Length: 423
Image (cartoon, rainbow, N blue to C red; front, side):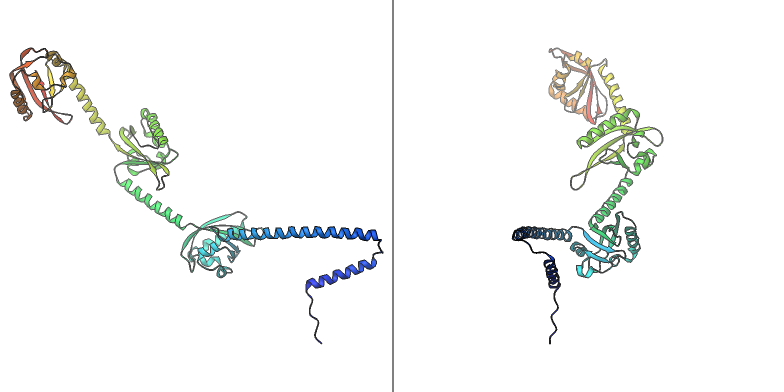
């Protein structure tokens, strides 16, 4: 005889329910026909309610399945790697992105130790990080190089927090290799730039987007005799002559607001205590994407140049006084004989105004043949000697012819060869 097949849990539950119903029916007293109909109505209504509830449950189940599918897609295809670790670093769960970062199948990584992904020299650091995660409810962060067995080395930023039970932690891993490499390249470029800046003679500074100067090269610090910390921000302005400070800040602020280059001269205190003139040229800086980074300035000491310009201006002033108020009629000619300047006596002597002189040639003032005047001009301009010509016939504006004595010699004025004629 074959043994009876085992009943399923659902069949056992149904049998118990039927037995309970029989006991209830046996204990229940006979009911009237009205009570039976009312009970039947209530059962039908209850059946409809159950069917409606069942339909709602099925709809909720579908929504839950869709939400779970969306969550799974977000979890697996997020740009960051998501890991669930135990206190000893064992991987219990991870998303597809995390598996791709580590160059292995997800099934091969579950159950493995995250420590094996860390180079031996950095495992102590990771152990300390993991201890901090499970020892505190706060989020812990760490940047760490990883060396997956089957993947390329990478630099990861790790952020982790333990769960409520304190037995596992959720760890987020972001690949920052490209960013770290870019930062390293930027540091190398900054170092090369500073090396070049410090090896030259120009005084160089940089300013950020906050209008504050944030770097001064060694020639600048050597010039002022101050430290980098003393010059940073607006500290450098302490070395600017008090009479020049407001003007400097105004020029810089206006150029900064317009993102334009500027050039200004001001007096800066030298380490010897004296003020020296410098020319400061500022240029806007931008990154490779065109974003504004601030300014870079190149300065040179122009004290000697300013002194030379002052001497030249003083000499020019003295020359103008001697030229303008001389008792002789003085004319300044170029090599072709065109009048470049004439003093007051020359204007009275010949009857021309200054602007009329500037449109005339020397031969027009002469009453002698043009060839005679041309030969005289050539002889004088080819010699550095003083020429004295005792007798020449000249003509005034009104046509009067008169005899003059002429003294002339060549000069270098403003880089040009000119002829000074005294009549």
